[in-house]
Length: 89
Image 1 (cartoon, rainbow, N blue to C red):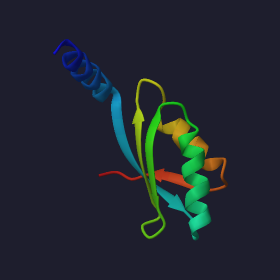
Image 2 (cartoon, rainbow, N blue to C red; image 1 turned 135 degrees about the horizontal axis):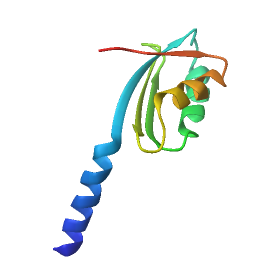
Image 3 (tube, helix red, strand yellow; image 1 turned 120 degrees about the vertical axis):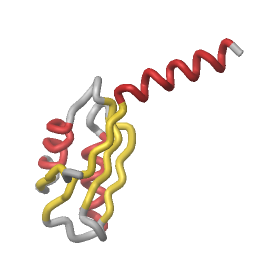
Image 4 (spheres, one colour; image 1 turned 90 degrees about the vertical axis):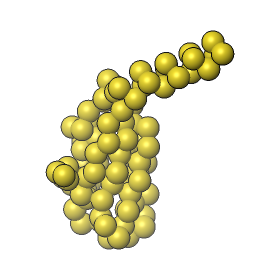
């Protein structure tokens, strides 16, 4: 029971810093582009999950806000010669 409670508490604390962002990727046109962009974003410390979709030309990124920020993610995209723009809801 104590172990379960510990896991739940850690999960709750981690969720406090979890953030999701959708980023439009300009000029992305092939499956290789999605792979390069995903790998670059995953190198950013604190990024937990990345989904890059060619059909929408967008990346969905889940990251730990206590370890990184959107600017670092956008900079990682820029290293692949693409431009990312945060999609506002």
